[in-house]
Image (cartoon, rainbow, N blue to C red; front, side, top):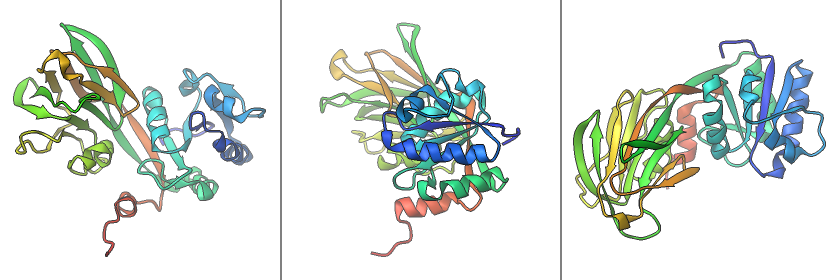
Length: 292
């Protein structure tokens, strides 16, 4: 965190009233440390009567120096995409099991956040993905993603067909259930389930991971984060493919659509307790080193 922290924004999981107590406790704790505390209007609607001032979600990024998200990895993904243009560092508090991103448990959140505010922390810069969909020569949709951009089949079991280009150079054509373009952050999400590699979060790379390819020789590919990955839909109009962004928004695709994925201009800064280790999280989440 490069600048002094004077105003902290608190964000809760959307439509989850169970976060009320945690947000109020955090607010009291931060105010006791002489920090200004704001909540976004979505979180304020969950709190009911509260002394914490609220700011519209669209504007809060301009007002805060640090964001604390109470919920889980999904909530953090959504908030991170919104706050990235403002350069606001993020701390994730997980109300359930330890997350890959929201890695502070609610039971020790005051202690851990206190240590962070005292300067006992480390931070990571996570690259963000930018995606554009071009149809008939025009950009019809654009979106960002912290985890992944996924092109996949619709509700039918029919395979979809597409071609992949890297920096304008043809890579291959494929039939299958789809393809994932994952950031290092997203390499431990759907891409890992599809057989992709785990990328260290600071690695300047992207993973291109096929989903159940009909040609088994199509293996996951790791490329530079400076690459522009282009996916061209080549099947019939009846293949019902769609593209999703972090699994939180999606768009139907048509034959001939071009999906471009590249590194976004902005990045995301995640702040962790000093004791936290990325490999500790991997061991816990993936049960590495455990004997059966």
